[in-house]
Amino acid sequence: MKDYDDSIAFLGHWGRFQQAVFFLLCASIVPNGFGVFFTVFLTDTPLHHCLVPEVNLSQAWRDATIPIEVVDGKQELSSCSRYRLDVVRNLSAQGLVPGRDVNLTDLEQEGCVDGWSYSKDIYQSTIVSEFDLVCSDQWKQPFTTTLLLLGVVFGSFVSGQLSDRFGRKPVLFATMAVQTFFTIVQIFSPSWTVFSILFFMSGLGQISNYISGFVLGAEILTGNVRDLFSTMGISLGFAVGYMLLPLFAYFLRDWKSLLLGLSLPCFAYIPLWWFIPESPRWLLSQGRLEEAEAIIRHAAKINKVEAPQVIFEDYSIYADETNTHPENHPNFFDLLSTRNIRNTTIILCLLWLTLSTGYFGLSLNTPQLHANPYISCFISAAVEVPAYISCWLAQCYLPRRVSVISFLLLEAVSLYSIQLVPQSLSYLSFALEMLGKFAVSASSTLMYAYTAELYPTVLRNTATGTCCTVSRVGSCLTPFLLKLGLYFKYLPNIILGTLAAVSAFAAFFLPESFGQPLPQTIEQMFKLKRITCPFTTLEEQSKPGIVVESRL
Image 1 (cartoon, rainbow, N blue to C red):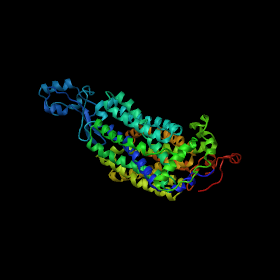
Image 2: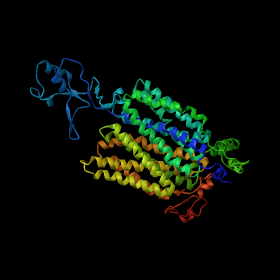
Image 3: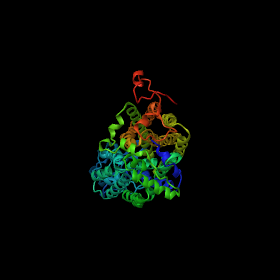
Image 4: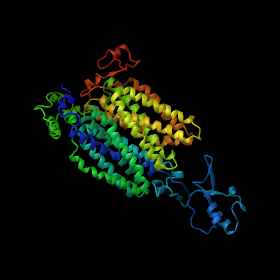
């Protein structure tokens, strides 16, 4: 069977058709850059203390109603308690002076029964101040982010299956519509419960359109252009959106205005439906030869080259072997069907889990890295640009396995090193954390391309969606993982560093796809070379489908 890339070689790699697909798909990814990380501003907790109602109190007693607590060696107003208001009012009426006539430590305290007063130095409002997600309800703050990421989990898994069943293009635009619609509806949430449900629904479209757009571009583009798109192109589109987020948040400091401001630009993507084509590879895998040829002939017309009379002369056989029959539609269980596929899937899921946990952990922690959350968020986003450029260079010149292992080890070393830095050198800790962010960003991007290169067309989107689903399980736990820092400051970094070190070892046993064409069938997937697991017996190695040749 003639290779797909050879069949469309007459188009060239970088004609007007490929340029349009490249830039339009990159542009469609921009909303993903602020689609998840707006929670950094949306769920941030402003400084707050118990509200003191307008009652007859002297100014001295009004100022002294909130107890002083020592937090990390600094004196701060208590966030969750105040001196009993009836007692304070009686003492004020008697003309006593706090601290002179009355020892404040002897006074009984009570909770914030009248609500809270929130600082507006940074935000006009967040959902924390809107729904009072503090003190006894502070668990709702990380849980809100977790609900969004749970939506991402289900969306990634379902969209991968739907994309393999109904096509890349319909799922790309459907998930964009879901993301935009539910984000706008959230503005009208009357309670935290309603907001959380809508937040979950919004998560169904988050990242899912990133996956569909990535696979669509990887299947349409070829050669070095595909490498450029799958590493630097689509990732820089994401980074642009990420860097725009703090700009939006700086000027839109009310959470409702921020959601609306981030949603409205998405309507500009509606016309792209008429310019972005379906994947010819996917159409061929479904036996829809005429539609695939029509797209390639249209591309040839745009590129001003002449198409041969027959483009895909051998693909009728391929279609019969894949998805022509309903019972052959791919699903999750196909990823566990043979030993080779199963081992590859398990290792990839571990790597995706580690990278997603590390990426979201370091990204969501940005408000704690600098006194100004807008600056820290921008730096966290900007560091991804050199990471994506490095990833592209690695993908062009280095084996995939070597690149992934190197980035994982760099992440582990940088995160382990943070606990060795003296507290007086906070800027060095910040630099090390950004170095870890650099490494995890580069390796996360590389994993998309690596995963797509390991699986055949019929399983590619299902595999990518499944790995992404597993990775989101880790990201769902990230908000609570960061809370472990309240008990031991460096514990989150130690956990993330350990996961990176373990995953680097597991990556040794993945197949190498560098310089290989995208596999079209499961049989071609078996031809990828891998390091033999030392625990595999000689009998197992002699079975069909078990590749024993090693290549570093």
